[in-house]
Amino acid sequence: NAGVTQTPKFRILKIGQSMTLQCTQDMNHNYMYWYRQDPGMGLKLIYYSVGAGITDKGEVPNGYNVSRSTTEDFPLRLELAAPSQTSVYFCASSSLSGTPEDAFFGQGTRLTVV
Amino acid sequence: AQSVTQLGSHVSVSEGALVLLRCNYSSSVPPYLFWYVQYPNQGLQLLLKYTSAATLVKGINGFEAEFKKSETSFHLTKPSAHMSDAAEYFCAVSTGFQKLVFGTGTRLLVSP
Image (cartoon, rainbow over the protein chains, first blue to last red):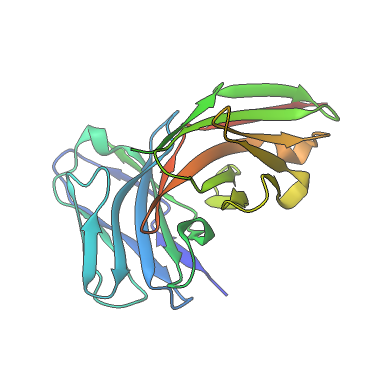
């Protein structure tokens, strides 16, 4: 039972480069989330999805894009990387009948933009 | 808007001592409150949650928290710290529609 899987675990990007952070879950959860965690700060919601084909902005969406073509996958796209996007990114999922606190979290992707 | 404030970015205790991690909330509606733990290089794990039932909530690993409306607090406690409790702890409030707002976290250090 893999749960929520994020790839890659670590990445260094140069300013202006683009990349996609992958997230997949095998629990058939409807809800999926992307958070970022900056040093000394709590997690902040970037985007979330309530099901395939439906996404919405969270608290800090600028500089990011998402898509949800399948229930399992919820990739996060950075188009023009900036140093301010240096952070640890967490993907999470929860079931339709669950509540956000019952979300399962991935192990995170540590991104550094130089 | 709902928010939580965690007092103290670091808390140090000795093994066997009481653990007290503080969290105060701000909410215009009855809140749902949560405590999460994050071990190094891991995702977040739910410790316990308050959803308007009993005000004293028991969680995993011997932790508990008490909801005090008069003090707008939801402090996390454990009677006796173990070395394995060393981690970062986050308080969070639900803003509805499956979204959480997190505090800035408290790192718990446990010394032998």
